[in-house]
Each structure stands twice: as structure tokens, then as C-alpha cells.
Image (cartoon, helix red, strand yellow):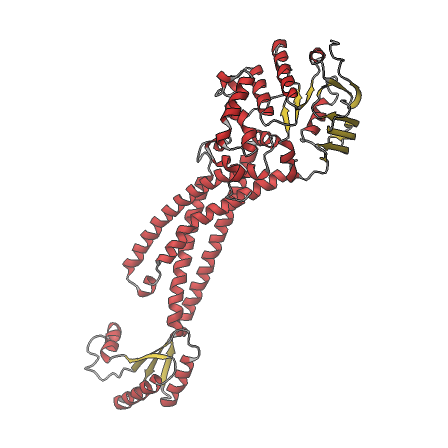
Length: 303
Length: 235
């Protein structure tokens, strides 16, 4: 008999079948334990997914952008080198854009440290050029750096991958941690179901014996319990999802208020919400399978 | 045993031992003919209930061969047990009614287990309730029924699936003589429909009431004798 099969066991899911196990719906602690675990699982999964999407954006950014600084106190030489580098970089394969950062932008960037009036004093500022590559192009930044150094040995090339690498490493570690937490929660939920199923088997020992003597198959008996446990698990899962969603919205609201581009990149797109919403369903399926296997294994020890 | 009739149950040198203790049943060899009526008697501790447990497949023997419905049930795989159990009706000494189900639901259970459609359950259950005289108590729970009424619900549950053999363990042990007679009448009626009946009892006064019954006697776990049915009109 299949997990969801009906056939000759369809009465087990009917009112008559439900009456065989007399406890009311949500009678034990299991739904609430599942709710707590699902709450934690959804939070961990949300963190993992948000970091995953952030890491993907970061990865595209890291592998596809360099900034060139031309440090030369002589403005004419600096501008000439910048023009040559822009021309050379534009001709490189895989380059999608080359942009010289305007002096006003640089002044604005330096204003917090050097104060206003940068243009009035003689302090030279480097020429800066952003070079962007097609995402996924390998070797583009290295080739560009070689070409730039050939034009101006004093040019400094900052590959964004270099300074974002530690952050990417941290994000990857946190994603793994989130994944491990989700798996641990799922395992804990499955063990809870196993304990609940064993307890239910003991409670309803007499009924099971009678059912066996009347010719019930193990699968028929297992379906009685797995239906009850699935209902409890689905309820607990939905409660956990609801509470976790409220927390996620609240944290998202806080993140939005921070106003940081870096922190703001940690976001949950619609796909991530769909995955989170599927977790209670996956948890219910897991509970059904765990309950069924537990009961079938326990019944197999009897004649 | 009825000559010429096919055997529904056949024991050959069967022994049963619980754990590492002495044998509860030893060297049992006998057969039950299809459609016959048997009493199983013997003093307390003779092994009557253990023998019945072997027949209603609650226990495998420690040794020997048991054939039921033409097949060896000693080595029968677990997966095939339900199919065999559905062919056996059992009336337990302690009734084993499911306490939270009504009399109606208890009686309907074998049909549901057997996959009978819900629309086809009500009529036979009502007929069975009427047959055992409990039409007015259909929705009563076992704990509100008297011992005799519970006994009749248990019998109705055992026979509603039209089993090929009915095994009853001390079915009259908890009822008055009048009720015992009525229950025997029910068994005889079922036997006339072709069901083999095996009734374990230590009440020897019960046996003469069923003229065509054969008697199997156990003593200390061994077969002490098989008494054939009394000649027609002899009692």
C-alpha cells in the first residue's frame, strides 16, 4: 500500500478510521515541539538563503570588476595615462564597461577625511578607472592588469575579488552553518516523530492487537498513525512558519533601516519565500515517512 | 473426525514452548474437518488457549507442522498472515472489544479491514446485530454492555466476515446457562452455513447440547482423546 494510497485502506482516513485512535487532534506535545523546531528551521533556512543570494551577487561583482588607480602628481601625464588605459581596456575581450570616475566623485569620496575644498589646494588625487567584465569571464582581470601595467607601470590595479574574498569566505561559512542547522532541526523533528510514534504504538497496543487478529496488514495500521502524525506535524509546521515569518519581516525591516549597501544586499527574493513556505510541507512528508517506518519496523517484530 | 471431509486444520507432531520453559503443548497430531463442529476440553492449564493461539495465528509452534486451508502456516511469511487471519474468526475469552468504539463499529471492523465499501457495511452489520439480539444496543460502548452482551458483540465481530473457521475460547465462561445455550445456538446456526467451529470450554455440560459435535480432549499439553459425534438421535 502506498504512502498516500487509498484502495482497501481508504476507510482508515475516514471518520470511522479516525475513531480507532480516540485521542483528539493536537492531543500531545508533538505539534508544539514540531512548531518550535520548524520556527528555528525556517529562521536558519532564511538566513542561509539570504546569505546565498547575497553571496551570488557578491560573486558576480567580485569576479567581474577591477579599479585602476593612476598615481602621478603631474596632471597631464596622469590624464594621458588614463586615456591610454581606457582605450586599451576597452579593446580587451570580455570587458563590458570602462568608466573614469569623475574628479567630483573622488572629491566627494575624500571629503569626509580631507574636508571640502580639495580642488582649491594642490593635493594631487589619483585618476580612477572602473573596468567591468562580463560575469563568469575567467582571466579577464589578470589580462587587463598586465595590459595596464604595460602602459603605466605606476598604475595600481585593485581587483575587487581581493578585498571581498574574506567576506565571501565568511558568507560561505555562515551558509554552511545555516544548512547544517536546518539538517539538525530536520533530524531532531524526525526523532521527535519516532518517539511520538512509539509512544502512540504503546498507548494503542490493545487496538493494534485486535486489528492484527482481524487481519489488518502492517501498512493499514501504519496508515492510522501516520495520518494522525502528519496532521500534527502540518499544524506545528504552519505555526512555526508563521512565527518565523513575523521574525524575518521584523529583522528585514531593521536591516532596511540600517541603510548599508552591504547589509542591504542580504535580501529574501520571492524564490526564497517559496522555499521557506515549502518547509512545513517537507516537514510533514518527513514526519509521515518517519512515522510509517517506525511503526512498520516495530510491527515487524511481532507475528 | 468426519470421514471424507477436507481438513481445514492439520497438526502433525506439534510442540509449543514459551521461552526456555517446559513444553506447553507436546506431540499434537490431529485434524479438523471443514464444516464440522468441535469442542476442545481439558482441565485448566491443559493448553487449550495455547492450542487456540496456534490456530488463530497468534503464535508459531516450536516444532511440528501446522497446515491450514491446505498451506503450511508455520513457515508462512508475515506478509501473508493478514490474508489467512481474515479467514479465521476468533472469539477471545476476554472479548477484546475496542472500548472506544460502539458495538456497531466493533462489528463493522472486520469488513472495513477487508476493504468492504462503506456503502456495503451497514446492512450486514445491522443483520448481525439483530442475529445476536443487540439491535437496540448498536451505539452502546462495550463498557455500558453486560458481559453477555459484550460476548455477543465479540461473536458477531468474529463471524461477520463469514470466516471459514470460528475459534472461540471459553465463550460461555462469563454468561449464565441460559445465555450459554443461546450462544451455542448461534454457533450451530453458523456451522450450518458451513463454518468450522472450534469451541474451547471446560464446561462439560455444554457438550451434549450440540449433538453433532466432536470433542478433542487435552491433558497436560497432550492429546488425551478425540470423541466422535454422538449417533443421530442418540442424545
